[in-house]
Length: 305
Image (cartoon, rainbow, N blue to C red; front, side, top):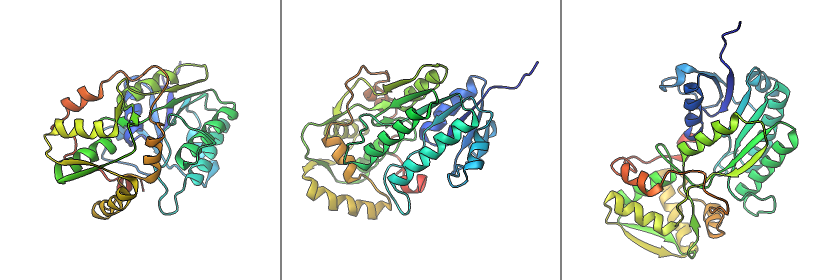
C-alpha cells in the first residue's frame, strides 16, 4: 500500500497569500510543490516545499511541474504594469497556466481573484481579473474562485506602508473622493477559505471579505491613532495627489498607490454585497500588532518585480 502523501501545487508559495496556503496544506499532511520565480531557500517552510519555475514560455515544462498534483492553488497576478509586465500579459500567462493544469490532470483549481471583476471595466486590473475567471470557468476544470478586496496581516504591503508613512512623515494626504469604503479581509482567513474550498468538488464563486467597512480616511486615522502617530492628515483632490504620489514613489523607489487603485476605491469596488466570510476584525488585529506594523517599508517592486 502506498504511503505517499497527496500533492498540491501552489503558485507563489513564498509570497504573501501563497505562503499562508502552503503552511496549511503542509499542516494537513499534504505535499506542496510551488511554481515560482522568487524561491527563498532560507525560508522556514522551504525544506517542505518542492520548487519549480513559473515559466509561462515553456508550456511543456509548466505542465510537467503540475503533473501528479491534485489541486492547484493559484495566487499569480500583478498589482500594476511595470517594465515589460502588463495586465494583458498576466491574462495570457493565466490562461496558459489553466490549460497546463488541465492537461496535467489537475482535479481542481482554487483561484484568488478580486471583488467586483468585470470585463466591461475600464480598469485594467478588474478587466483582466474577469478575463482570467472566464478562462477558468470555460476550461472545464472544477474550480473555486475567491474574491478578496484589501488584505491585511503579517507581511502585507498597503496597510503596512500606510503605517510606515504615518510613522515617518509630518503630513499624510488622503484622496478627496467622498465616503467610498473598503472591507479589508485577513489574509489567514482567506487561506483558510482556500484550503477549505480545495477539498470540495462543486464550482463556487465567493467574495472573501471582512465584516468591517471603512473609508480610506477612516483606515488612515485608525492606523495613526493605533501607532501613536501625530501626522497631520489632510484631504486633497486627485489632481493634487497624483504628483505627490510620484514624488513619494521617487523617495521610496516604489509605486505607493496607482491611479487605478484610487479609481477602484472611488467606484466602491472594494465593497461586497454578500455576507462576510473573513471573521477576523481589522481593528482588533491592528491593535494587537501596533508595535510592529509599519516599522519597515515593504516595497512592491523589490518583492514582485
